[in-house]
Image (tube, rainbow, N blue to C red; front, side, top):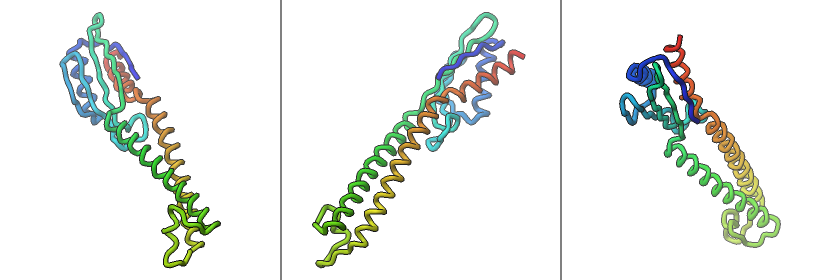
Length: 181
């Protein structure tokens, strides 16, 4: 998730060009130590690709002969990670709850023995077997949907982590093309 490039520009010029390019790409500067480093936030909490996921990128500049070496390091922002983990935990809890409800109501419909969730479909001595089966099926579908959502979230997170440095790499590539031509 680190990228390095050497540009044919003095460190102050390279820093100015980098900062300009970052602001043009809608990056929010959160820390500066001109002309040695700049740290930005880029992306959104709701981003699902390496380019759109919210991340922190630190650029370090150092003199290298007659040019400037620029190194970037990208990391997912802490709030993006926290939201992803919280969403996954919530989905797991809800999927387990739905699976339990589905199995419990299915068993209740078959045996008509009172169970944890039977109160949803019985009352006043009347047992609604069709209601139990319907709720059991609905809970099963929801549990499967949530499990699928979790798998999709893991795939998205893998893709995002794998390409996390792509945005910074393109910034450095653009800067190098402008200066090394």
